[in-house]
Amino acid sequence: MTSAPLDRLVGSLAGTGMTRFFRRMFDDYPDLLMKDLTVEAVNPDRTIKLGGRWVTNFGSDSFLGLDQDLRVCAALERGVRTWGTHNGTSRAFSSAEPNVRAERKLAEWLGTEAALIYPSVTLANVGALPALVTRQDVLVADQFAHNSIDEGLKLAKARGVRTAKFEHNSPAALEETLRGLQPFRHAVVAVDGVYSMSGELPPLQEFDRICRAHNACLYVDDAHASGVLGEHGRGTVLASLGHYDNVLTVGSLSKGFSCLGGFVAGSQAAVDVLKLRSNSLIFGGPVPPPYLEAVCAVVDILMSPEYPALRARLDANVRKLAQGAARRGFTVLGGLVPIVSVLIGGEEATLKAGRFLYEQGYYAQSVVFPAVPHGHGVLRMQVNANHTPAQVDGLLDALTALAAGTAVPEPATAAAA
Ligand SMILES: Cc1ncc(COP(=O)(O)O)c(C=O)c1O
Image (tube, rainbow, N blue to C red; front, side):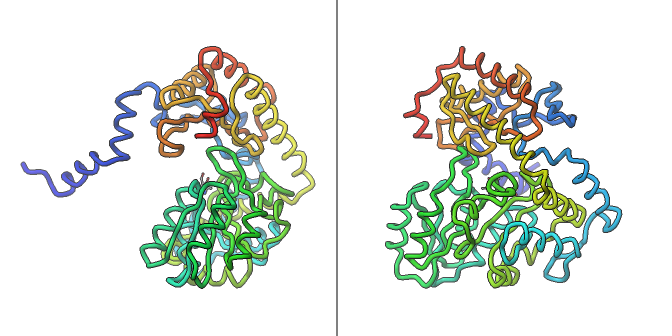
């Protein structure tokens, strides 16, 4: 029997770049790649049963530990009882009341005029970025900005918008790029608020100054900062600039918030335009109402007097792990945010390091290409407020054992990654 066109199509795709790369990884490191492991059970104490083994989870974006907060869980349950599982219609037709309420609460928390919730940050970026520009405008991004920003650029480019990337975190390169793109009517400059693989922050004040000088506005994807950086967890933009005058800030409702979705916040006029021009919002479904009830519960926690203590626990855990890893000879990237990445070396060494920790009872992510440049790798540990000091000490003991058996790269190599 001859194969169907779909079989032939899939066969050809299996021979293309990224698929071939992953196949080679699976062939070369069948026991080291842990991508196919399943989380079989979760305990409130940050332990998970992963691939048949109970381990302490240092791979969760639930930075404040709110995935286990009884008030957030109760809001979700109440939401199901009140609204059912889903609103069942695009927001182009109508919005469920918790959607409108959650947006109002997010804007009040941030101090922006308005906020607009998308089903994820990815859908926010691929919806909002192309919506913000027309053919007379330009769209510019940091070369290491999140993949979804890159996808937003590609969509805009397909519609005839000029796009460009500039050298990572370099104000001089941004200025040169904007100069080189003149003449344009308007420009949007997109960067991450926190680089999730390295934990680095961008020089927002310098970027803001350059943007204003070149008739550009800033678009900051603060997904990893939402709830965990800045006063009351409002993120990097307000903490760094003190205002949102020329900025759209993007946040996550899935990471520190432990709920579901993403948002773009800024002026009412900008949000109104995005509502009319973001295809991912108009032609896609919204976050289900129960999750929006949970988002409201999280904002209440962020604004409550209990927040400083929650944040202090998180910050203490981050400091303990970052300083402890550095004392053990590791080059720590970031360490200001709850993502503590240490440089291990090449792909195989990085995969082995992740496997070693797993066997010691700790799950951290071995990050290799395409998330970092080819041939490099980092061990990424995510710290949560409800990790106990003993759990962090245990991970540090495992890192001591790892360092004893690994040639840890020098900082110069770290800079290349
Ligand atoms: C900067 C940034 N933007 C967007 C995303 C994707 O967010 P989501 O899972 O909500 O699509 C991530 C995920 O880690 C991220 O780090």
